[in-house]
Length: 530
Image (cartoon, rainbow, N blue to C red; front, side, top):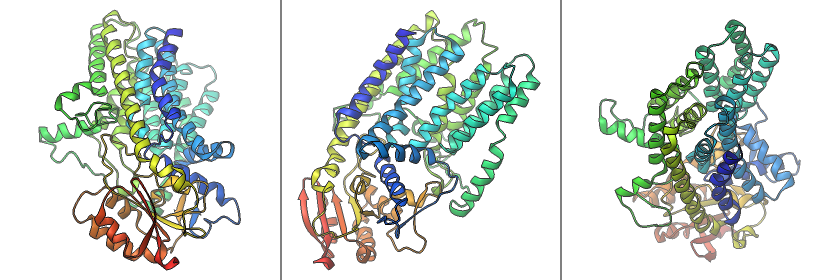
């Protein structure tokens, strides 16, 4: 047991150190979540400066878990510390959940390899994307399935049902995708796991799933009011009969890689197809192949008993590989990566790490973790270089000439990096934390499953258009920016520009004057306030 715990700590240590040693380590969506948690806290004050702009939906929404956790952390810690604690919590919670699930199902043999796999799964792409509520739901996933497993032959079925019902309810307030996959996991395990008195066990499991009924009705009502119909989109699988399309699809589905596969950590500007050999997912895939071959060739005594885990893992991994990228623009992205990630979590407890022939897989997993840790540290360096310029004192203090309750737009240029997550994309949240600034870029306001929305009828810039212009490298981005800013100039007091783009600056200077220039950051205030 000790060596397994040590391996887990060693695997997670570089990422945890990166979070706490780098001054501005932020995930892609982390600053936005932090800003909206701040708005939630301020909404309890009748004199809140946000009251006329934002409305809080105090409804049973999925995604409440992340916001409530951040809200609680912000009451006892400075906001930036709260963000670091949340980033650390989502990392460690998944790793511990996977590691503990292995012990519950597979015992204590082969724990070092299990620890390496747990650390690798925790440092997944959705973690750096900052999908806080989903990550909390992903941590509840192994807890719920593990609780089902250890209590499957319980003599107190109704206590077991109540525990499962409580975990399912908690899962709802984390994230709907992780909740749905957890429910599927319970059904698959129930169907394929042998044991005595299976009818009683099935009845107990079904009773534990009862909360899904009313919760589903609540969610459908919320979806109709703000999300619209489901409209699945396969953005990478253009032709199901094309091998090239499937290669593109499977490459995108990868839930582990946090960087492009043609780069190495700390070697910015150097690319090569051969660098793909240093991609952590390549080493993970090789390790899984070895372990599956060992499992098929082995004669494990508990293979029949644990077949439900193998079936569940296969369903989720294959299903995730074939699933759409999104169920619709208003329903969120990265569906495939979430499904495949939890499929790997489901396989973790039954992989034959204890077999002698599985030792090469342990070494491969160790290499994968080391490479992933290096990429996380490189991401930390990128975060400091990009988002750090937003968090410096020149911006965290009062913006010159901006007045009270300034309405702010942030526009970005040249933000492409080697990483799938972008630390500056939603770094505008750093401008608003602890202030009375109204951030027009607040992307959460456009999704029905987040609690903070712009008030009905309020005139504001299109957050989708702002994000698309920031990400665009097309020649028409300058024209799009001019059209947006002309419409929004009367309701905007401050424009923060990041990145070098003289054409974008020229557009901004039509209606705003520069008051501060530091490195990649320019701050403009409305000429109407001169």
